[in-house]
Length: 509
Image 1 (cartoon, one colour):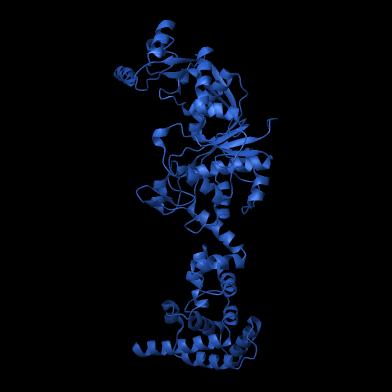
Image 2 (cartoon, rainbow, N blue to C red):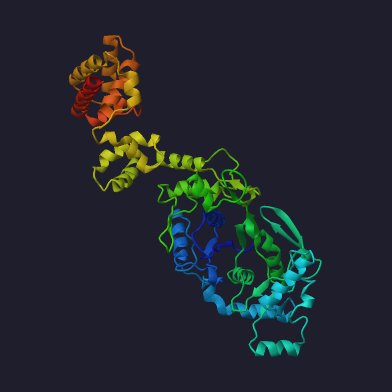
């Protein structure tokens, strides 16, 4: 751990919806900050204005809000290190780029796009398909290293477009320690002279990223593996400015459930699961589904995400957010990619549903039902049905019989269990129930067992028929709990109606 106060940042680009991989990056930053009593910052990196998508920034903030992992500094949140949107910091970047030129760490390059295309084509024709602007080729290009100082000044004064490129030294090893991957060593001969400042007056990601992380006093950069190839350049930039570099941690990729490769929206479309935290609506009106609108609890979504690349070193799988903050460490983050499992995601949802307060579930369910039923009744429905559900709406689709007379009866159970003497057995059971003076779960069970003993019947000869006539289902929660909830009058009414329906069915056969 660094002796500096922990300050981490999540730095998405507003180029579209926030992929669940991005949410995991935000989550790990949040957990790390909370674990070390640090600060979690969000910074919107919109230096590439050509890819800006209206509404994307609001979507990012709404998604983090839903997940319960909101930063403490950022756009609209305040903080001492703003602005937190890069385009609003535009004026501060050029002096840093000019400083690097002055110190011989960068240079002006006047090459046009046609010049660069020509060089690439020439290299390709000579059998070198991956031409780079680097320590070898820059000597034959139009830049301040090959032109005289007067010529450079004249071109700049005349308004000729130029970029500022990093002057990558020749044959040096760049070494840095990654908190997840250990030591990383890259030779500068394998690196090109990246553009740091563009001709449109905007910095590239590389320069803005380093300047912002430094000026915002970021202590740890926790980001996706896709940024690992850029890390040597970033380390060199820190050295060029003479700044202390942050600790780096590059997170493993999220992989598709089947086959190889990075998890994408297409995989979600193909296999039928969301890859975004909340619904994303395009400007054309196309809707890409999210976990929120699919009925997932944010806590279940976050718990699932935490385990995609990290494990606590114990058998515990269900964690509250507070418990995740306490248990999280970068040391237990894997180097290998994490394969996404949609079934495991549903398992997390099931566990949270089962452990959620019945009154809360009833309130949510009643909203789904347009507040049609008393919430105290729905709370009992939730209690009886939640162990058989994955989502709140499943409680109703599987347990609506608890509030409404069934209109159909399970065909498989009817075929298998409704024998010749079924009508007589159930008529006698209705008569027996009519004598009940107490209609609690326990009293009904005692009465039922006495009925079996009296008529020398097995449980399988009566209980499935009892369930079928009262609920219309072939399986479900305890029939004694169901009967107690419905009450004696409703229970006998359903049995009677069911018997009539079965009689009609038998007559029509």
